Length: 332
Ligand code: SF4
Ligand code: MG
Image (cartoon, rainbow, N blue to C red; front, side, top):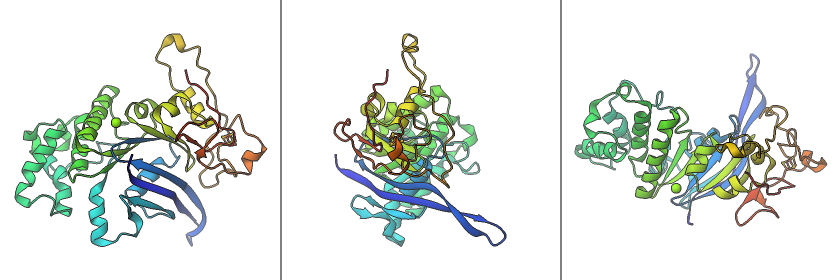
């Protein structure tokens, strides 16, 4: 596929301030060197426990934050060096859909104002006289009644509110949408409808998604490829079937072993890998492989040598793993 978005060594460190002088006493290493490519029209899922840096990554891809280091390229353009009008134009192409449809929509604005808001900033996309009609088209596109344009967010259900957020996200015809936990706040029955809507829009509009979530099943359903994050790093990256069927990184293997097995006859077959200890603080991550303090396969080299995310002997095609001892393990 053709690359639309490319992240190279993205780093985000937040200073930790202390004392009356607010001196910097350390750094939270929220993101510590993440690289990947997003292809046109695909869905790249990003999974990991809370605090692994996946939301920081989402914000960096939107340039809601400036990087500590690293490079982001959108369609050949260096994102972090753009200024003023050029950056504004770029913002049309990369949009975000947030997690919580209850708090991300302004309760005092009508649905028409919310969905049409991007046209205020990017005023040349749709002429003023045509905006109401365009908003109604967008409502129809996401499965809402165009006649409800004057209603307020509280008059909609959670799933409908997320549709409003999605309508706003596609209003400017973006090429990439960062979906940050877009269904986590919704009932399970509603989650599938919203995921189906995202897939429909992807096909119709040719969108590429970075789909950030902690729910492994949802990510599996929607993703073409999946990246697994741990403590600010991407530890495994590959096709959905590689990650879920033959993971090679011990952390991925542990995460998957904890997913409930739907088939009761397989329940005793799956061997659960129980990780010891808590996730270390991102202010003071372990040396070498960051996972070594919890990894049952760790050897001496793991506490000194940081394994690169690369093609490993047991991986196939573009299946990358950041483990010195990467080894495929079938998941039942
Ligand atoms: Fe475990 Fe070592 Fe692989 Fe890290 S490099 S995941 S500690 S075996
Ligand atoms: Mg798809």
